[in-house]
Length: 154
Image 1 (tube, rainbow, N blue to C red):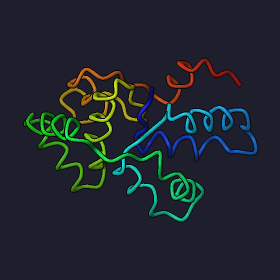
Image 2 (image 1 turned 90 degrees about the vertical axis):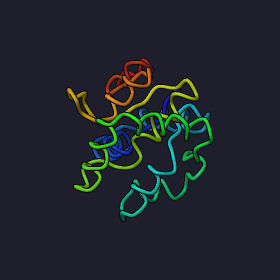
Image 3 (image 1 turned 60 degrees about the horizontal axis):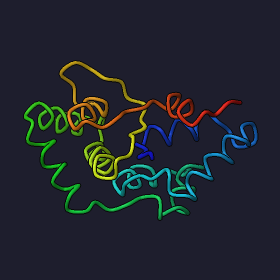
Image 4 (image 1 turned 30 degrees about the vertical axis):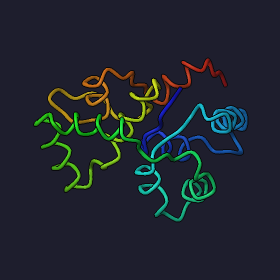
């Protein structure tokens, strides 16, 4: 169903407080428990280093964050074979604006037939998650689009 990038988790945990949005978190927890929302180990590494509610949640939900298999590694290699992506991803990573997780998120979604959920927007000639998704033929959703896709109303 969905592979979440770091930004999607951050947005949910930062702006949708559990006490205020109880029904949202009930629905989210159900999707987590049924493995309809997953992510990758690289996202876990990005999120667990902080001392906040999200980091604590990540540490208690290891099963959500999956390692890549060989098919996914092949997709990642394909992404990096595109010179524009290779250059932009490496440059952004050096500037700490882009994580190494992005290709892993897209590869996981492609192999599993899932949709990617992130907070990034498409940028011409960019190496953002939506650009990688387009390149690999994977559907990309914003957090709001994810909620609409699930028909969540609050």
